[in-house]
Length: 370
Image (cartoon, rainbow, N blue to C red; front, side):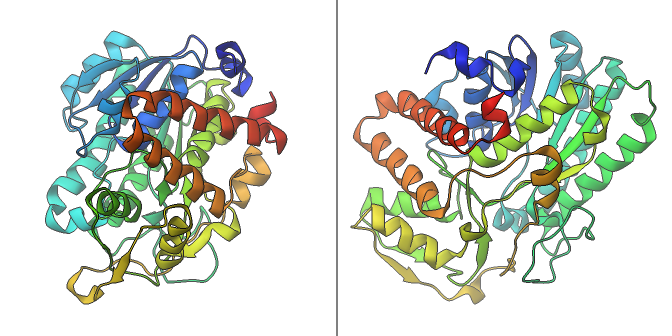
């Protein structure tokens, strides 16, 4: 695929745009940086740490402005926005792990709530016309273990510090939107996006099932499974990113209707248990072995969680592309390529993106056909 063809996606809105991406060194952030570069955007990354070892950002080395900064530092964040004058911000920086939030609750709340406040405040103080997509989580909802998916207007909540911090961030986002950015002549457009349980190549974070599997395979170990019956809406990382980019397009086009919260989840057949995911991975990696651990030694995690994405599908005209088996196959093959020839992994990553685009175009997905 030619670069020019990719740059024309999303009505070509990102070509030449300045995009500030917080959390650009994270798993989702790195994939987003790669995609934005293929859309011919100028990407300014802002992050204070590498989240894992290996780190996908260090592996791929996308061509972005790489700023070491903390979203808890309002002064530095304000200077970055005033210096680089972004057209749009994708705020992805976060403490993103449930188990880690039990060990470091203060850091989790400060990063996820105060960090979000600082991004919004820095935008407000800048006086610049900026679009802002805040990435939160599917775990923002008060989880009643319902068998049906949560909708954007369901009550927010959170048992664990991570979930509560993300619910708090959503309240902050809505407050700023109504308090400062609601006027008809406002030049700031703010939306939030909720997704979770993303999988894909290059995730090495602790206490996530795909990284746990890949680390164990690399070492020849058995994979410990702590919550085999937990049900999650698994989706490849490119799925929610396509939703974020569609939402960003609408904000950049100054369509203020889209200044609200949006769910981005997978197809119905992607809602599987942890054990079903492990079994599916083993279809693509025969020497995978796993064992079930007692879960009572771990802190609470939701057993059943899914999203109702009807609003995004019907109104934004977004839709997921890959089913469960294909998402797992693409992910497993990425890690195989990495362990076989890591020097060629950037090209393999682009091939994943091109394949996703091709499949989306064949499925007549809106963003891939405009």
